[in-house]
Structure formats: C-alpha cells, structure tokens
Image (cartoon, helix red, strand yellow):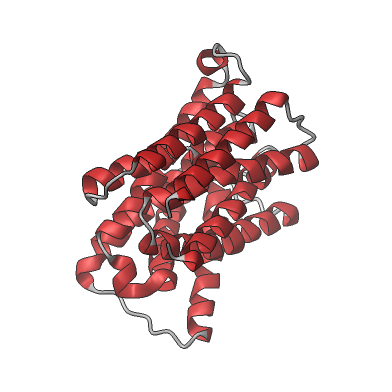
Length: 290
C-alpha cells in the first residue's frame, strides 16, 4: 500500500471533520448556505491557482475534458456543498458529518461496478464496522431516532454523501487526475463548481452578508478542507483502491464530534464513544491485509 497516499487521505478526512462545526456556526449566525458555499470555493480556487503558479505549473484544459470537470463541479462542489450547508440549518453538525462521511459503502459499490475493483472480505467487514459505528452514534442506541429526528436535514446529508461518492469514483474513472495531476484537477473542478454556485446565488437573490467572522470561516473552509483537503483526496484516491480512502473517511465524524464538544458545547455519550471505536476498528480491519 502507498503510505503517502494513505497519509494524504487521512489528513484530508481529519480536516473535513472541521467543515460541519464551522459551517454550522456560519449558517446559524445569519450566513446563507449558498453564500457560504460560494465563498468557500471561490477561496479554494484562488488558493489553488496561486499555489499552482508558485509551483511553476502550467494551466491547460483539453476541450474533451470540460464535460468531466462540469460533472465533477456539479456533484462534488455544487451539489455536495449545497446539501451539506442546508442540512446544517436543520440538524446537528455531528449527525450531518456522520451521514455525509459514511459513504465508504457507496464508494465501494461504485468502485466495484464502475471501476471493476474487487472487494475483499476484510474490507467488507471494515465497512460494516464503520457503518455500524456511524449508525450507533446517529441513533444513540435508539432506533426510533432514525425515523423522527430531523428527517429533512438528514436526507440532505445523505444526498451530499451520494454526491461525494460519485465525485470520488468519477474522478478516477475518467482518469483526469492522471492527465492533470491532483492540484490542477482540483482547481478545475473547484472553478466549475464555483461558477455554478455564483449563478445560484444570483438567481436566488441571496443577500451578500460580509460579516468578518463568517467570511474568515468561509476562507478557512476554502483553503484547508477544500483546497488542501480535496487535493490530498484526489492524490489518495488515485493511488489506492477507492474503497480504502472511502473507509478512511469515517475518521471525519470523529473530528466533528470533538470540535462539537469544544466549540458548540455538545455532549458526547457512551454510544458516541462506542461508535468511535467501531469506526477506528473498521479502518484498521480494512488496512490489516494491506
């Protein structure tokens, strides 16, 4: 197994855990979900472009690949972020993070069907353990919570999960990472999604609120979890079987849970702790054979 790719995926997942807490702080203090998403990926696009220039990289985009980046922008940038930030207006940040990041199963299935990747027994067990951990944290041991707890917000988080799973697998299937590299691939996907978000903001006549705290949060979300995190993810998923980064992603909700306790004063129950152990066990079981 490529250790650098594994480390890249781990760092990406840990930074993504911060999105849900800081994102909830923004949307619950007056920032419109569409505007948060727009500022986030405008910042990500500028950061990636400047970094690419500093590295002496060359900007190019083949006409035949435009459609691929439009699809990546629509799914992994526009769709996923709109669903996430609207979800955060309706439900708890930890629950949104869990449902969003429990997409290793979807990534594994799409990798199997679209990329013809084989799934080992150990990877299946790891997936089941990780999903079980997320389920335990989400329900807190009470199955009725699935049916009655913030159904609309939870549904949006699940839709975000599907968008990200498709983004991850499509980027590998189309081989855009091979042709452009992780940084330039992330940049073009980000630019594509940013344009879509800008159009949505204009069409919806979203009020442009430039509160300094929320602007800084959006810039952070653009540079660290998006600009750096997405690039590391592209690198990781291009070097590893798609199911492995998919399961590594189970680490993101742990970051969210810790920050939610510190910044949002949420409490962590025994069920959450047990679910966290299951998530870590799922990751370790998946990597055992590697």
